[in-house]
Image (cartoon, rainbow, N blue to C red; front, side, top):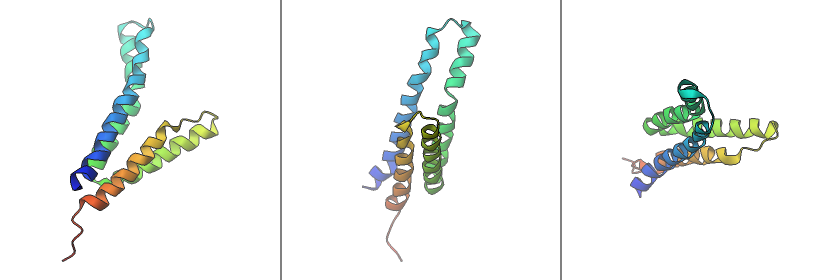
Length: 113
């Protein structure tokens, strides 16, 4: 069960980053030229780079990464609701943060000396 709690939030985060990367593929339907397309692709992938950095942070420090995922996901949801565009896909980030906190709790040795 420890392996499940260790790997589940990490695999879910990788799948979420891959899912978000699919939205960056819409830059290939424009007529931007090579450098314009490369720049647009880079701009579209900035959230993925940030999430990958957060994943690396959470991989090492689960509690810190878990709280950052929760706070960032809640902030994005709050801002998107204020703008009248409910972007609830970022509830997944809150769930990932909770899973990292649970991973820290359940994957450690709970036996006390």
